[in-house]
Image 1 (cartoon, rainbow, N blue to C red):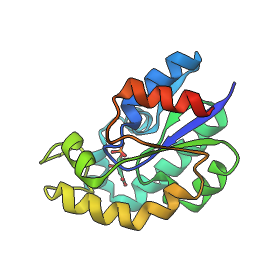
Image 2: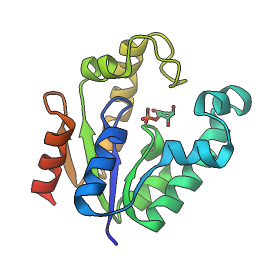
Image 3: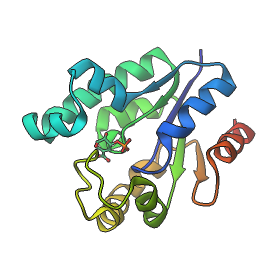
Image 4: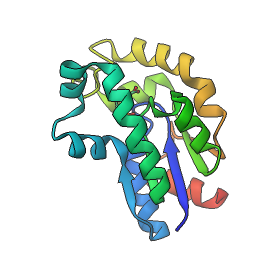
Length: 164
Ligand code: S3P
């Protein structure tokens, strides 16, 4: 089984493109955000609210490393590659960075998004800040980079397939 890990900012399309790519490659698909919610029995905003971000990051690291170990097509939470252990694991596998502008990501995520605790109500300005802070952690491990702004999810899959 191969390992293909999708990384990128919130709104880059990881959770939409991941299942399409997995189907195309006839691989299993795992969305680590969904996995965390399943393991914790509560959604991500509630984990942030009740336990705080450090707890979330600890669970995220554990589940991300386990998912990479299992293989298939894996979409990570936007902040997962910031973790040093996750960063090391990404160096060993095929990493696809879905690059996106803050404007497009904000439009996709919605103007007032309650499902992403780090974005709050100032989605666009928070995304600008977050992308500036994280650009290097997305760029460094990326085997393949696809700019998704002008592409449909199917076109993103085609772009990835042509690079694999
Ligand atoms: C986060 C992104 C979210 C989720 C959590 C934290 C981040 O995933 O893991 O809210 O730090 O950027 P998506 O990238 O799927 O939105």
